[in-house]
Amino acid sequence: MKTLIYDGEYFNVKDTLECGQIFRYEKLSDGSYAVFSRDKYARLVTEEDVVRVFTDDVDYFRHFLDLDTNYAQKVQRISAISPLMKQACDCGKGIHILNQDLTEMIISFIISANNNIKRIQLIIRRLCDALGEDTPYGKAFPTVEKMAQAPLSLYTSIGAGYRDVYLKETAQRLVNYDLSRLTQADTASARKELLSFKGVGPKVADCILLFGLRRGDVFPVDTWLKKVYHAYFEQGHKDSEISTFFCNLFGQDAGLCQQYLFYFQRK
Image (cartoon, rainbow, N blue to C red; front, side, top):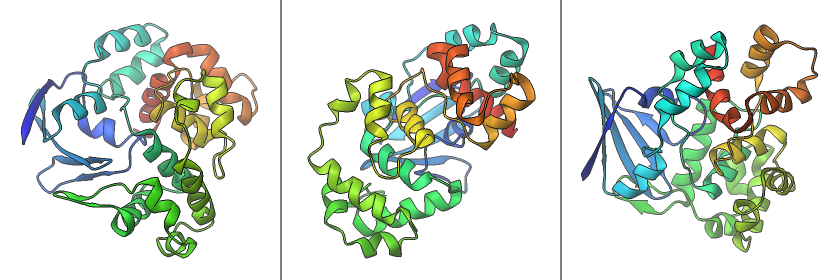
């Protein structure tokens, strides 16, 4: 394996992986983390003030972990918004928004709907075990072709519940789907397109936009972010209006602010 070395001041492995944006990771017995994306693998080790990334796919994981972005600059800009955002940045300044595979994000966040992280991870692991190709480090995320060919009973057997039909139908649609309809669309058009997929509601669409399409002008809202709004930003909005409120407030930094506030509230 080759090694990437990165300054740990603005990259915290635990905070980045455990903030709800990725599900295919594992904390190992030595405190390091194994990370899987598509058919690729990396092990992330934190040593004092640096992070070491061990992988056969250096360029892939440099991009995946967003190591070329200046997060110090982002933290400085967001910290200046208000004392609360300064606190949130101090709490989560090591979080990176990952550059994840779009297809994997569509499938993963359909599974995430009305679910908890441990169960999401379990279902995705079972999906990979059932349909993924073998790699030296475990099973790859399955191709949409393999998923489309699988019987509905497979999705029921891995514990997908009512999402089994959504996964089957989405995989079938993605086989001949041109992803540029999402990647080249503006955020509003991409959201509208995502909402046409079975099993994709507003929150899931925003998660895919942020974590699969890197759209900074979205703000996924879950129970934690509703608590943040009512505790610190209350202005009488309905729950369905909270995301738009935060997007208007934070603009292109909305997605990263969401991660900082999410982590701040959970801690």
